[in-house]
Image (cartoon, rainbow, N blue to C red; front, side, top):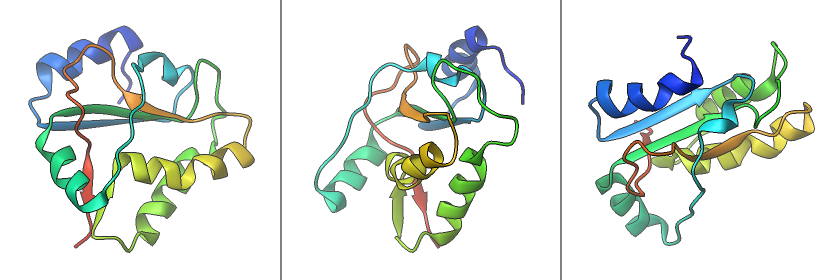
Length: 130
C-alpha cells in the first residue's frame, strides 16, 4: 500500500478502528512519522499493561534518508518472527531483535516509535505465538 507521509496520521486516526496499530514501513524517509520511544520493565506485568493501552507504533527501515530497494529490513523482520519461540512478543522487542543486524548489513538505520498525534497511549502491539 503506497501512502504519502502527510496522509498517514489521518488514515490511522480516522479510518483504522483498532485498539492497537502497528505500521511497518520499508521506505525512504520513513522515520519522519515518529514522536518518541519508550521502554518497559517487568515482562509478565508489562505485556498485560501494554495490551490494555491503545497503541499507534511504527517500524521503518530508515530515518530521514533513502533506503535501498532490496533492503535487509523486511527479510530480517520476517526471519525474527519465524524464529520467535516466545508466547508473547511486543513490537518493540521484535524491532530490537533485528535492528543491529539491519544496521550491520546496510547503510540505513531503522527506527521504532510512537506515531505522532494519532492517539498512542503507551500500549504496544503484541504478537501471540500459537
